[in-house]
Image (cartoon, rainbow, N blue to C red; front, side):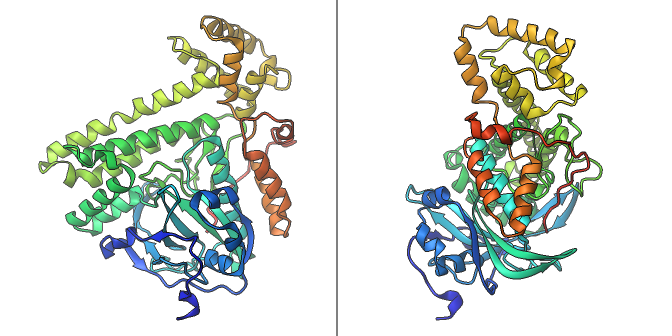
Length: 490
């Protein structure tokens, strides 16, 4: 038995259901070896949820698995094939720097993909080296875990491991691999790939597999593929509303970065908004603002329309009827999204019921925030704590008039002040992974100091706690950097 195929202990309970799909959907992969793995950070809570032994993961064999030097028992390593619309243009893609070890079955019977990101070349690498550097992998760890703690559906990070390699980009960087955990890695782009390069039977098999894995309760319905489309639309409407409510900007909402499960995936050029502005863009490659904060709901609908197109052969044998069914389903996205968003905004403002004037009150506040260049998170934090001295917005006459209107609205509901405060506190995070804090942690990590990051992650564990420790992290940098850019990390 070769070193690469040596079996290790049994806390890994892997299945490979995706690898039982038609071969068009993946390529078998022999993992690359790396010279000297060093575990930088391990997510203890997630490891326990997955049923993995922490001591085992921290040992030599565990580290070797997390970089692909060894394969755990039951693993069939593959790279997944998919396509995608990137900035509106379709292209063939696939796991160009990642491999799927398999699907861990947890003690509760749940199934999660275990993927190594930055693990080397695959048949889909398109000329790249398939490697990743330490900073972008730690960025994904920090922000994906922050999103999870904020209550937003997301892929998660089990750990980041240095490989001992130098990665050549503009400069030489430390190589690293992220172990990513997901309900699955099935994307809108997976269905686009099946539609363009597979048969109708391939498409049907993929759809049936997706239903069985994520939506088993619809498999016996009269029109299961229409229900699949409707379920994905509902999940994405809810997800994007949650992004908007905390000021999260994905940065690269290509169709290959939209999961069928409804989880946030791919934390490349993402960031959280400081100053409120719908036009905010951080991604260095989004030069025209296609994926700006305010555009995210519209892009979500556009991506879902591409998904609907892939299902047309399954929706109805009559093409025109299939198109009608798809269009009717997609037309529901806007109302689904808006209802989720305004419900969330009401909660952020302590509104425990629905009133006709709520939309105007919300929009007036957002307009004032934009006009006064107010910080998004701290505006709602200040309203929650009734601490209205620190921001220029709160000193304006316009705000005073708005506040009187808002307070009058709250008085006309039955809930007590304590109940209103509790609702607001649980809806407005005290802390987010602010850009300057993320960069501070990544810069320290590049120099071998991981304590800055670990301390940051600790306070991000309970973003709605409003603890004294979080106070420091809620403060803005001395000067907002309007030129701040994020990068894909390839």
